[in-house]
Image (tube, rainbow, N blue to C red):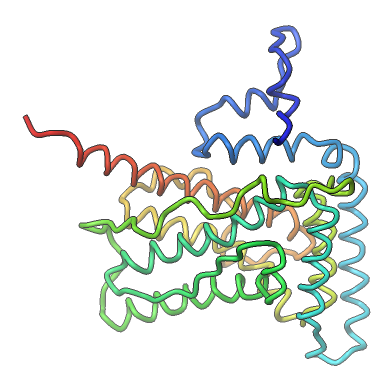
Length: 297
């Protein structure tokens, strides 16, 4: 049985309120309690507090140094297979259970969100879902495929809309059939003695590896795929006619590329934005189901 996070185990002290407890109890962010608990437990960990401030500048320095080194190697030099094996190995042995669970969830949630948009668009678009059952499944170039899926989906969706001469608009009948809780469980994540690295530290640590072992084009595209958060959010909000919910989707404008040095931090924002968008879709789905069960007067 997983231990209760410290911010939930301690009694509330009005003279010394716990900021993590305030964030957990706050209902303004549309996250289910298990996800919010895991996210905040990971964010309030000793690794996040003491290790991340040292890792972040070193990781960004490594990105710069690796960029200089890659000037002297062939343009297409890349080892994606080795990269993904290293990532899976590191996740299994050093990353916290909460962080691993959130990472696996992200692939499922992202696939469901794209399927929701592709299905409810006036020009239907097929998607390529990524649904890893465990950490070992990530070895199959899963991170690289995730980035490719985002850009390919935006291109195919807008090609289809332009070909039909239509624009994305409110769906008259919304299909939520693809929205569900991912079949990955926190209890199944590795819990070894070294599984203590928090999500943000892990991402900062792995980002230079991503930059080193992919081509410059692949790394640049991966970093700038994060700026599609607003784009995907606008698509979903348009279909639901609920643009007021876009306030929590904020990863900068997609037409203004940002430095790859902040890719680690923005990747964390990307993960949280996806969780929130999926939670909103679950909420809308539940509301429609509740309305359908109300007997007419």
